[in-house]
Length: 159
Image (tube, rainbow, N blue to C red; front, top):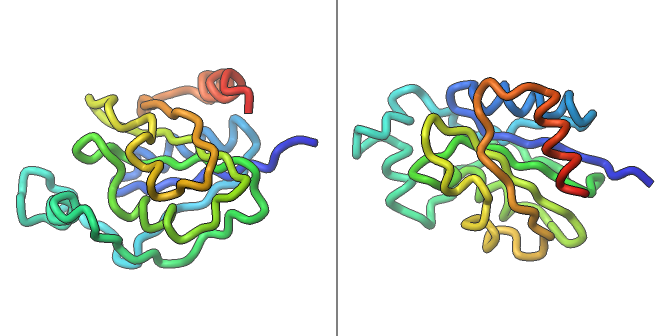
Protein backbone atom coordinates (compact mmCIF):
# COMPACT_ATOMS: atom_id res chain seq x y z
CA UNK A 1 0.00 0.00 0.00
CA UNK A 2 1.42 3.37 -0.95
CA UNK A 3 1.01 6.18 1.51
CA UNK A 4 -1.30 9.10 0.84
CA UNK A 5 0.66 12.33 1.20
CA UNK A 6 -0.43 15.93 1.71
CA UNK A 7 1.86 18.95 1.46
CA UNK A 8 0.59 21.88 3.52
CA UNK A 9 2.24 25.26 3.71
CA UNK A 10 1.97 28.77 5.05
CA UNK A 11 3.56 31.44 2.89
CA UNK A 12 3.43 35.18 3.47
CA UNK A 13 5.54 36.27 0.49
CA UNK A 14 5.27 33.35 -1.95
CA UNK A 15 8.66 31.75 -1.30
CA UNK A 16 7.38 28.82 0.77
CA UNK A 17 4.42 28.43 -1.58
CA UNK A 18 6.73 27.96 -4.58
CA UNK A 19 8.80 25.35 -2.71
CA UNK A 20 5.64 23.55 -1.54
CA UNK A 21 4.29 23.42 -5.10
CA UNK A 22 7.54 21.87 -6.35
CA UNK A 23 7.57 19.40 -3.46
CA UNK A 24 3.99 18.28 -4.10
CA UNK A 25 4.73 17.82 -7.79
CA UNK A 26 8.00 15.96 -7.11
CA UNK A 27 6.34 13.40 -4.82
CA UNK A 28 2.88 13.32 -6.41
CA UNK A 29 1.15 14.64 -3.30
CA UNK A 30 -1.91 16.77 -2.71
CA UNK A 31 -1.27 20.43 -1.89
CA UNK A 32 -3.14 22.72 0.52
CA UNK A 33 -2.37 26.18 1.85
CA UNK A 34 -2.47 26.92 5.59
CA UNK A 35 -4.42 30.10 5.06
CA UNK A 36 -4.88 32.64 7.85
CA UNK A 37 -8.35 34.17 8.12
CA UNK A 38 -6.66 37.56 7.94
CA UNK A 39 -3.94 37.49 5.25
CA UNK A 40 -0.54 38.93 6.13
CA UNK A 41 0.51 42.16 4.43
CA UNK A 42 4.08 43.29 3.78
CA UNK A 43 3.78 45.58 6.82
CA UNK A 44 2.59 42.63 8.93
CA UNK A 45 5.78 40.68 8.25
CA UNK A 46 8.22 43.56 8.76
CA UNK A 47 10.36 41.99 11.48
CA UNK A 48 12.21 45.26 12.04
CA UNK A 49 8.98 46.86 13.29
CA UNK A 50 8.34 45.72 16.86
CA UNK A 51 4.67 46.65 16.45
CA UNK A 52 4.16 44.59 13.27
CA UNK A 53 1.72 41.70 13.41
CA UNK A 54 4.43 39.06 13.10
CA UNK A 55 6.52 40.70 15.84
CA UNK A 56 3.53 40.87 18.20
CA UNK A 57 2.61 37.23 17.50
CA UNK A 58 6.20 36.18 18.14
CA UNK A 59 6.27 37.95 21.49
CA UNK A 60 2.96 36.37 22.56
CA UNK A 61 3.60 32.65 22.20
CA UNK A 62 0.01 31.75 23.08
CA UNK A 63 -1.45 33.64 20.10
CA UNK A 64 -3.15 31.43 17.53
CA UNK A 65 -4.31 33.35 14.44
CA UNK A 66 -7.54 31.93 13.02
CA UNK A 67 -7.52 29.83 9.86
CA UNK A 68 -9.57 30.87 6.84
CA UNK A 69 -10.73 27.25 6.49
CA UNK A 70 -9.97 23.94 8.17
CA UNK A 71 -7.66 21.42 6.52
CA UNK A 72 -8.83 17.81 6.67
CA UNK A 73 -5.84 15.53 7.28
CA UNK A 74 -7.95 12.40 7.91
CA UNK A 75 -7.35 10.80 4.47
CA UNK A 76 -3.56 11.19 4.70
CA UNK A 77 -0.79 9.06 6.17
CA UNK A 78 1.97 11.66 5.84
CA UNK A 79 1.63 15.44 6.04
CA UNK A 80 4.45 17.79 5.13
CA UNK A 81 4.15 21.15 6.91
CA UNK A 82 6.02 24.04 5.31
CA UNK A 83 6.60 27.52 6.64
CA UNK A 84 8.99 30.46 6.52
CA UNK A 85 11.29 30.71 9.52
CA UNK A 86 10.34 33.71 11.63
CA UNK A 87 12.75 34.15 14.55
CA UNK A 88 13.95 30.58 13.99
CA UNK A 89 10.48 29.08 14.41
CA UNK A 90 7.21 28.60 12.56
CA UNK A 91 4.69 31.44 12.42
CA UNK A 92 1.89 31.03 14.99
CA UNK A 93 -0.72 30.21 12.33
CA UNK A 94 1.12 26.91 11.75
CA UNK A 95 0.45 25.99 15.38
CA UNK A 96 -3.22 26.90 14.87
CA UNK A 97 -3.34 24.31 12.08
CA UNK A 98 -1.44 21.65 14.03
CA UNK A 99 -3.59 22.10 17.14
CA UNK A 100 -6.85 21.89 15.18
CA UNK A 101 -6.34 18.37 13.80
CA UNK A 102 -6.24 14.81 15.12
CA UNK A 103 -2.73 13.53 14.39
CA UNK A 104 -3.02 10.02 15.82
CA UNK A 105 -1.48 7.57 13.35
CA UNK A 106 -0.12 10.37 11.14
CA UNK A 107 3.45 11.26 10.25
CA UNK A 108 4.47 14.93 10.07
CA UNK A 109 7.57 16.17 8.25
CA UNK A 110 8.43 19.86 8.35
CA UNK A 111 10.24 21.98 5.81
CA UNK A 112 11.11 25.62 6.11
CA UNK A 113 12.36 28.44 3.96
CA UNK A 114 14.72 31.14 5.13
CA UNK A 115 17.29 33.41 3.63
CA UNK A 116 19.79 32.57 6.35
CA UNK A 117 18.53 30.63 9.35
CA UNK A 118 18.44 26.85 9.56
CA UNK A 119 17.47 26.57 13.20
CA UNK A 120 13.77 25.71 13.57
CA UNK A 121 13.46 23.94 10.22
CA UNK A 122 13.51 20.48 11.82
CA UNK A 123 10.15 21.22 13.49
CA UNK A 124 11.17 20.11 16.98
CA UNK A 125 9.68 23.26 18.52
CA UNK A 126 6.28 22.28 17.08
CA UNK A 127 6.01 18.80 18.57
CA UNK A 128 3.94 20.00 21.53
CA UNK A 129 1.27 21.27 19.10
CA UNK A 130 0.68 17.76 17.71
CA UNK A 131 1.99 15.31 20.32
CA UNK A 132 0.06 12.34 18.89
CA UNK A 133 1.90 12.54 15.55
CA UNK A 134 4.97 10.61 14.55
CA UNK A 135 7.44 13.38 13.78
CA UNK A 136 10.21 13.05 11.20
CA UNK A 137 12.86 15.78 11.39
CA UNK A 138 12.49 18.24 8.56
CA UNK A 139 14.95 20.63 7.00
CA UNK A 140 15.48 24.06 5.53
CA UNK A 141 14.95 24.18 1.79
CA UNK A 142 16.42 26.81 -0.49
CA UNK A 143 13.94 28.96 -2.40
CA UNK A 144 15.34 27.62 -5.69
CA UNK A 145 15.45 23.93 -4.71
CA UNK A 146 14.82 21.65 -7.70
CA UNK A 147 12.11 19.00 -7.90
CA UNK A 148 14.74 16.29 -8.35
CA UNK A 149 16.46 17.35 -5.10
CA UNK A 150 13.10 17.31 -3.30
CA UNK A 151 12.26 13.83 -4.59
CA UNK A 152 15.69 12.57 -3.45
CA UNK A 153 15.25 14.13 0.01
CA UNK A 154 11.80 12.56 0.51
CA UNK A 155 13.05 9.17 -0.69
CA UNK A 156 15.84 9.37 1.91
CA UNK A 157 13.25 9.77 4.68
CA UNK A 158 11.99 6.20 4.16
CA UNK A 159 8.41 7.15 4.89
